[in-house]
Image 1 (cartoon, one colour):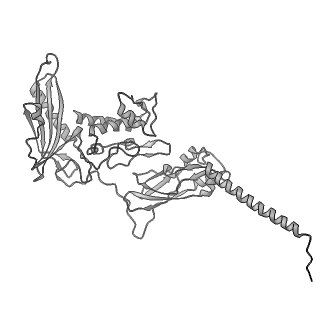
Image 2 (cartoon, rainbow, N blue to C red):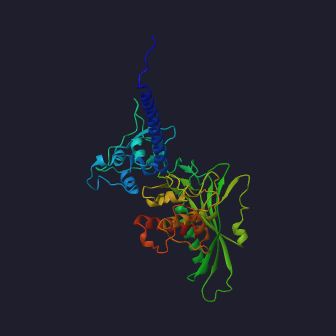
Length: 429
């Protein structure tokens, strides 16, 4: 017997079609919403807001500056005003971020992994660029009571020791065979330069009495006995001339100052055993290296107090002078760039700028001073200061400010400039 078709069949078909179309439209809307959110989302690079250093117990610790993120995204900060976090899911997601650390094979470099509700943030127009990256451990960081407890690096059964900061110099006591340590870093030659200047002035007083004089340094070399390694000296050649009234036709005098047997001591200083000053008949004789046999001695010329080493570079990725043993510059949450000259520089840090290809020590000290004022927008004349105008003008962090004054500097920065200028004066004179 044939079944009788019901009248409800067309209605069911229409409902099925409408339901299918509805589901398809909903899927399209969700896709469009997802694409739209990604298209117009604000990218957030957490590495720009993360500080990685050693905590109170010497354990690597990472802190995300959530306050700076909220400020940059124009979001309310629950630490500064009372808000209901239920009304701000994006703020809540940012406040709940945590960082996990893991050691890498490279000393001083760690892997950071952020635990974060990325779906909620993307729904509110914030797209996290990456949740995992490597970063260098930079010094000691201070924790305060308002910061969330950071996650420390994971430990194994044998707890790993935090990476140690390498010493400035890794030399054993003994005669110097090079003006660089085993890592290619320059040595602190301040006592050597000061003694050379003292001997130079004594020689001028002997030549000219109480009269005034002018003196120029025509050559600086470091000589090593390649056979024994025990006989080495620092040698500076000078040209001196009487100055003042009636000295227009005064003759020039030439002499050398030799500081002999330079030694690296247990206290980490360069000392020497004797000093000798010798007069020469002319400038060529004073500069001559003929006294040193090429087969026995190694002679290193020190342009501007420096010594050439092809394995060193002068500037880091942001155009700041690269100091040996100190971290390179990086972007702060405020948008400014940190560099080593924000902190106190030591003489060793400055003298270690020797050994950089293409730049004398004197020239790098000028850049180190100029970068401090450049951070505050010091304008550079395109003609008189063309090298600084080009160098800093090519950096994205630099912006010239016509209202710049030196008063914007901190006491630390002013002190660093004085120390840099003092050492440059030793070298140039």
